[in-house]
Image (cartoon, rainbow, N blue to C red; front, side, top):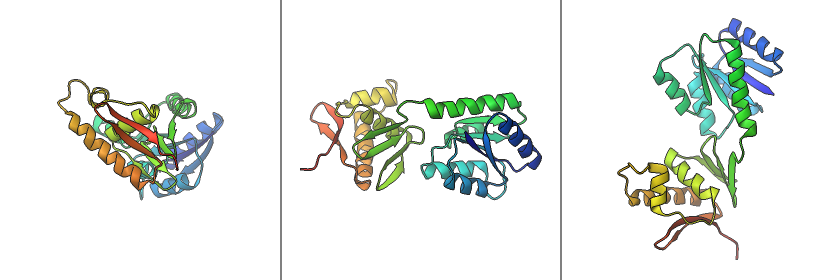
Length: 226
């Protein structure tokens, strides 16, 4: 199992590399955010450990760029910052976990095991219908023509439709599952989000469509060539 370690404190980087290699991991160590991004773009890694405060590019910028590009590599953020807002920013940017310095090596190893175990063992991480794919880790909707990283509710709607292609879901069902019963959202908001998704499907040249079943709801169906 191969990891990328991006940590600009060279002494800490050497210590972490030694511990990780003794624990059976292959490690590539870099010392700034630009190198981290370049390595992750060109190499195949099972996980990445990114320090947030790095030269050239900070860890959050690297993470955000990876997720924009559809790279699903699991990421553990390391930082000296312990404020809640910093942790939230990291997780909202697509991090899989977050560890505040100083930390125990045993905890780091446990977090890496958990992060990579989720990557390997999660069933149906990528949903596929027709030529359309939805990555549940990265919120990326793609075909061979391109990809979009979906907003949260767009993703939840698409995930529901792609999990049960052909099944009709009412607007009320979407509202209950995604907005919650206590929301003041109305059925019209569902139509708005479905309209956004239809435009994305058209832009991706997807061979599936969101079909409206009159007075019933909406479903996803594959368009067959005639």
